[in-house]
Image (cartoon, rainbow, N blue to C red; front, top):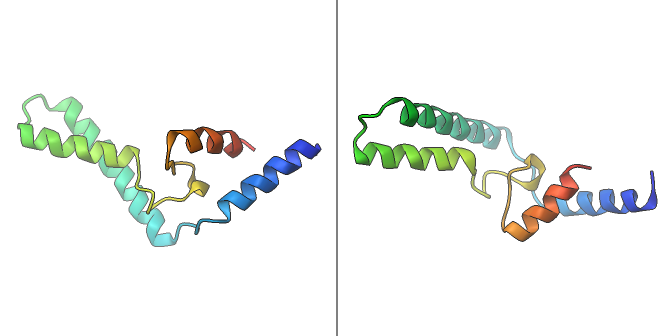
Amino acid sequence: MERDEEDLVRLYLTDIGQYPLLTKDDEVRLAQQIETGAAARVELEGSPELTPARKRELRKQVRRGRTPSARSCSPTCGWWSPSPRSTRRRASRSSI
């Protein structure tokens, strides 16, 4: 392994070590949130006669399923993004 790669790995491990790992309950909650969002997307696309209130609720569920909250997901699962700038930095490290 080259010196630069070692530095990136060390930097990545130091960075992710600052955050707690997901618990089993967190993983279940996150999976349910994603599944609910996917089901909401299907209902939105397949039901043209939805009330405006139902459409708003479904869109909210779709957003929640796409972008899990920072509280429920750490950088170790790949979806945590506190800001666009740090997202770019983390994305390049996650490919290591």
